[in-house]
Image (cartoon, rainbow, N blue to C red):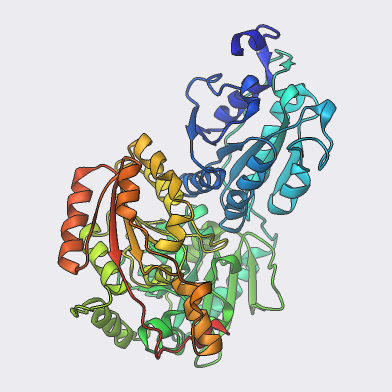
Length: 562
């Protein structure tokens, strides 16, 4: 079939599509193919690989994570109708988690394109448009190169995000003219820049000169701007503490004295300690560098203690002025600001405020030696993973209450050394995110922590892990229920309702083995450490199931505004 289609024209739309994606640096397309396989085989362009998954959501998340780590566009593909709708959650993930993903889906033939009438025909452009930076449908075969260029260009502008191309099956198989097209310039991430940003930067520097205890609140736009080394130079020169969002952990190494940690609204409750007040109470100036509200570090979290001046530095216009009203708003990329500040700030007279009581509480928490009859505690699991990882590679977290233990405790010594979905936070994110991290960093270990609820919502891709032989160490913390929802039930009602949160028992090790992945059950710190070391050294897919339990009594969860 493929040879017959190819002889109808020197170049098909399918070939031109894949060629242009590859010219933009795309090396893989993650996805699932449907009946459009008659028009596209995905072997049309040497050097571009198709990565088959078990669910389209996985394809979107894998593209999202590889794009995030590489800071380059990546691609995913789905068939028409339900394939496209399944892919949409992955597209939403790249939208809210800020990754330049080029999403594509087949569509009914152009002569039979009647949404909600034709078999498997939906208005894919109408559905994807609200989720994407750019969205379009192929109308003429010769337009395919321009559509890819438009999609990539839009995706790489801050806030970076996905683009979508709808591809009618008959046009995919059609021919395009062979006129040469100039290879695109592979540009980096771009953003807005206020013409007067240097004057605003001077105002911010003056606030820093007057400050006694300034704090940098860092988001991932700083990483996308390739400003991490400049950030470290600025912080070390002026001794300004760094607090990060969930996903900006690692911009400074874990043991750097100016690393004050990542912030979660759950941290006071988890630690049973006034963590937010300790971190932010003494601060008199907050410099929100690469700040993005979607990363879930809210202005209310730093609203502790004395009054503060706030500086916002971002390559986008402030989208939430009623929530965040900065004293100085600098619309520029973090790299440009840091370069300017390093050249013009001179000497700053400030002192890092003391957070030793918080650090002592964290050490006490992580060193918890107790053997609990009802299952390990997540902080014990995280500490054991840290002891084996030693900051090497990537720790990935699925979504659930345990995720916030990862935010607080997971060791991250490089940007994106801890990965989670701060913006979209969809159940089942963890496994495909770990696959994406392992593909992006093939020589480094990847550790996944996932709850039983989220993991089993997308566990079919265990087969993909095995087929691709990705040496991910998967830790499933299992309490046979949705723990985060049980927490909310207790906060709102003082009790839980089991039919809404409780599951029957699943043997995840047996499930892993059924899909070609080795695994074992453990129930103690010592056994978990042994299993983690064995799995890390084996360099093959491995699943470790750990029974855990949560204690929802006590703890201040006031930052959640329940």
